Figure 1 (cartoon, each protein chain N blue to C red):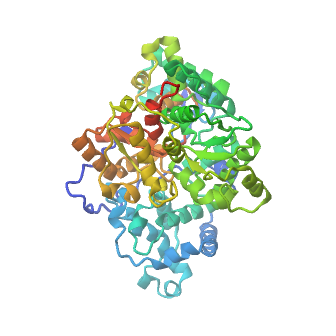
Figure 2 (spheres, rainbow over the protein chains, first blue to last red; figure 1 turned 180 degrees about the horizontal axis):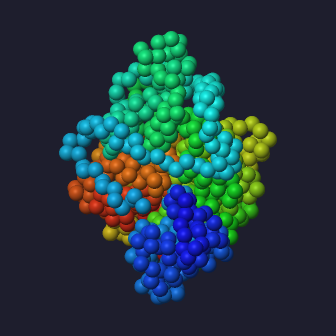
Figure 3 (cartoon, one colour; figure 1 turned 90 degrees about the vertical axis):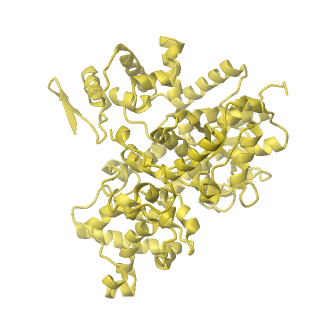
Length: 110
Length: 513
């Protein structure tokens, strides 16, 4: 399974997540967003970029609370809540935004 | 994503057995674990291309399991198909698929057992409902044994006391053995071994998250509530599901745990090695995995030199801790190897080992060591959902039924408005949330929505009658499952939360009491 953008192929798993996180680039992020039906705006990219930065430091996506706090600090307290994130990523910031960011799906009792 | 398109079934006017919809859930199948995931757990990587080989391996392994677990043979032999269990299963009620009747689900395995392990089945298979193991049968096992949440409600009603979950576990063990594992559960167990918890949260991320919590609680309350990690010599090792560090609303209870330890002045620590209370080894029916996952807690307890072990809000973890840790690892008493004996000497036996966080908090409340501002919870009208594995697989306190009363005592001590749901849907007859036993994955969302039906009906009644706006839980899976599925029934996700979230809201931290 996978998809192709600009002649480059990206391998995905059965749920559509990138198999190799190092494959990711903005073109892949854009295509994954299209598959999710998310119209990417600057606000969406801010979240996606934060996720990627956090992942490269900690090898895991941030907890929802860590994410909202970081967004709040950066973009103002009115955006530092999960409601804002759900408006951007209706199927859940943890899962949908992670997918677009090319990160593995967080699983467990969540 | 299939999720958003699923429609919740309508509430039943009279809650009787639903009209049968044969094979209505036959399309639903969990993703199969990849070879590397399987092999990391010591299972066969994938199904053999040679069917006969798989066939023989399943039958041989079944023979081993029947010898190893006498209970399994008794359960295989003793069912008389009385039908008492049929309409007790939330997944049958919600889907109408007859293979989700507990008796029919068990018979998927039992029919094969009869064919190969009973005289009548060997000689006259058609007369006794015995059938050959074929690839189609194996696929059917995979589909339907992964539509059981191992909640054991049907067992409560079985006149022979058949533990149906044990049959599901045996079937899943057989599937794993021949390379037909479930991706969700086996990937998670692999992460426990590799990283230390179900989520795959590495030590530095855990530390960062806990430090963030300390800042948040300081900002909100002005108090320096600590969330310590890997502190040698602490009195209590606290073990909780990793979702408690990560997800909403779970983390609100984590804040509550910290406040309880702070207010009581008891030193405690969490552990990067034992940063997971959950034990999916039970879900897949693997004794080896169950033990291996549990062992991490014992190792952490020995390394940190703690005197007590307390377990957070996690349903199946408490069943494993309460019922199995003693013989698996020697926490409590039981195992006789040198490390278990060393741990026995180290632990303080004036306390129950292990202790559930609800028992811990309730003991402190009874001793007058915690004070609450109950009015802080007045905006909430609360009900409590008994989690299956606590209700039917364990106990709290030192008397029968303590597991039902103690969480409710805690809620009543910290809040003014509490209403129970209908008696046939709580206590030992509690309905599963619909997400337990290893089915909390996205590919089964249709089952999860439909299986929640009986719980949602009961919830709707207390919402209508009493204006309930908060359902309190003591299980990470229940919290995740309900947060996801209640919107399908017209409720808000925000009405789902933990018992220690309520404690957190009302507890007094300073000396103002």
